Image (cartoon, rainbow, N blue to C red; front, side):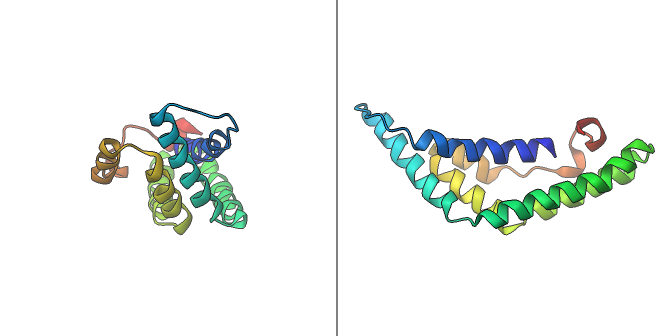
Length: 131
């Protein structure tokens, strides 16, 4: 789950890069800056209250799972984490963030992301080890 949160904050930090006031003459850099501006506009279309909603869901999840991990109920904690991950991947905010992030990803990487299907059940990571 830290990974999910980390990705979100990484994507949000990219908007700060898009606001760079320096003039760039390199065509590739200009293209990248235009893509970043598209990304920034896309991210700005998401209401701040929706990000707060996601944060509250994350906190509630951690409050649910931490006691399970502490009591040694790792299997139940992992099942809950898998369910939460699936819920979050289907959440409209994460779908919009994904859409926005694809604006700044190269075509090759975009194809890879589109074809990637993360299997929560077979992941080597365990929620109790990441909390």
